Amino acid sequence: AQSVSQHNHHVILSEAASLELGCNYSYGGTVNLFWYVQYPGQHLQLLLKYFSGDPLVKGIKGFEAEFIKSKFSFNLRKPSVQWSDTAEYFCAVNAANSGYALNFGKGTSLLVTP
Amino acid sequence: DTEVTQTPKHLVMGMTNKKSLKCEQHMGHRAMYWYKQKAKKPPELMFVYSYEKLSINESVPSRFSPECPNSSLLNLHLHALQPEDSALYLCASSQVLDSSYEQYFGPGTRLTVT
Image (cartoon, rainbow over all chains, first blue to last red; front, side, top):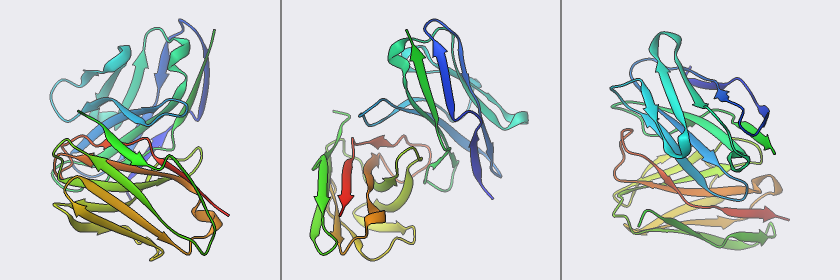
């Protein structure tokens, strides 16, 4: 069955700490991979996406993610978090060349303390 | 303009009421989606429209009735809802119904059924 797993449900970091949020997927075939962020009271925004090419993708606000095909992973990273990064982060996957529905992970709630 | 707008922002309705949620985009997108998001959970796909035609109904109860009157508008008609239908209802759009195209999300309508 197709699934998306996010390992950390709640993460608390101090400002300037480095961030890595895990995402693993179970899909047959080629996939498209996304990270979305939902700031408190705001709508879902796309942070970054991977379709093909360079497995290290850079997104907005200093975020990046690395697609490791052999590990079925697409982990999100940021070298130095800010208080304003406090939000819910969702990894999402859909099947390339077929399918359209985004399959979301359960989300990781990040709290950055001053 | 990369915005998806949704009205109303908040809605409280009784179980015997009939109400409608509205979604609008002016990006020329031909695929539009309804998602349901419960608190602290990921969005779950409800319906997909492609070129104003219903493409996918993810086994949603008939008390939810979608409508796409034109390429810019998507409505969700609500009737005889249950308290467990209380959630954030998200609208999204993409250029076409293809997994390679990013979905843009609206801010959602927070629905409370009393």
